[in-house]
Length: 224
Image (cartoon, rainbow, N blue to C red; front, top):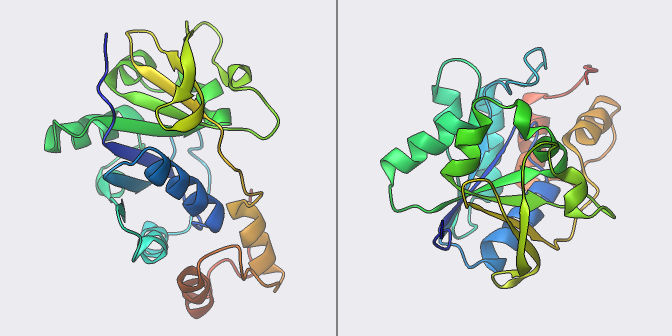
């Protein structure tokens, strides 16, 4: 199955809060692949973390919007926040494809999440629905994150205009494994710094830092 070059990338996550690591990675993909659009997709409730306490969606969505303001080609969608129930990725992909059949989606996924994709809701349909881009884990080859029991075959060196390697997923969809820089920033570490009264300057965009400060987010809390 030949696949066309993707035109729209989906980058999902809780974004609690969105930070410069997210944005740097998103920009590398957006610019490196010359994509017209990249959508941040804040999750309402990750299916694999049903008990994870999250900051209310209205705040996570607003922070994501402020973070991408002024970045050409990057925007935020509330497709999962509007939908009732768990944030199943397949439903998100199908809804965006239905709204724009010519979108040619590229689903961005982290190494840890991809290694468990065989446990996701209707994962075989998801793997056949769009192309994927695997975000690297520092110092680890992409094959280390391939899920057991899922046949993934090497296709070529290179990921279009990015350095890296390309693979084929079951059904013929493409898995891109580019060599991307990784910033050592996590949302959890940012929440911990705020709780302890430490500065998060340089870790999040200034607009996000102000939003967190003005609304008193993450103060006095301790969670996983």
